[in-house]
Length: 437
Image (cartoon, rainbow, N blue to C red; front, side):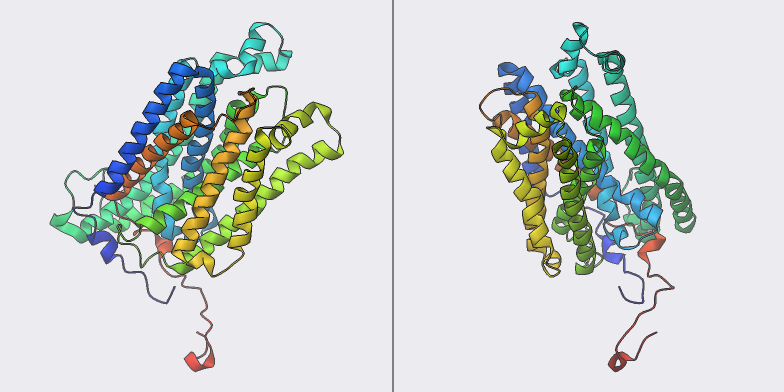
């Protein structure tokens, strides 16, 4: 990264007057309109299928928002430097969590929970005693809204601490040109003091967020997804899901940063070396997803667990889900694993955007394959306007929220001490360049 600190001038001076591009805003609003139409059509024609589509899309988009934000506490805990270059994009994802919390509350209180088989089984007294205590509508809704609410508040507190510090620094630089009524209260004193306070706040919150994420997302995975098949369970399933949510978040961080870095004035701050690192991490999660997917299947196969094999067989060997499983394997593992083996392709924006889009679609299909077979028992594949339209609507809402946040704040974490070069780093150069120093 060189011996001198990065130049934040362009990132700061591009803030006044910055707005979400009209084409982006109109496209996002158009997608939201499609989503609303899909929900309306689904409720009118097949509420049961519509509930399944919501669960699929909730697990996907809530996972992107929270999983993408997790790069922020992970970077703080590990004291790593390169993630700081895309940390602002990670932080912006946290502001979509309130949208998902509200939508889940609407789903839960409007009768969406009735799609779960254990609701009817519990009413008939057919659940085992320990499940009958845990799987009740009131307890389900309460723990979900409380758990998701805790994660949302922790993420927003951490993002706000970072934003306050950067806004204070940007205000000192911009003076009278600073936007009026700047959000998130940047009036926190001198920039240097604000940066120190921000760093300590984030450092204290980071391990709490990491622990809370692992614990609460385990609950979300078991409740929202696994309990659709209340008599099937796999110990690795929660970890598989919350780790793949981080993977999906990394994919969207790559997409937003590659497409929006020029608009935010941070192109010089996010170079090819950053995408090489981000690509390697994405590649690692691709391998981990493949490993944990196979690791769940392997003990079922060699242990001949007939009580668990049905869940796997329906999704991998039975029509119409077998073709979806093949597509998931191709898009989530085979294609990205092969492409990301190349060091050079990670540094080419068009190539990286392409593979990120492939993974994004693959993970959505994986969420669809995980959840919908427990809801849809017909011979046809429930992959139409309801499911895709709802996904389009949530994608539009996600784009609108994230770009609106990014339009109002510095596009990089300009006050973060880890944006500066490591003073203890040894730069090794050939003799022709003056040796090492």
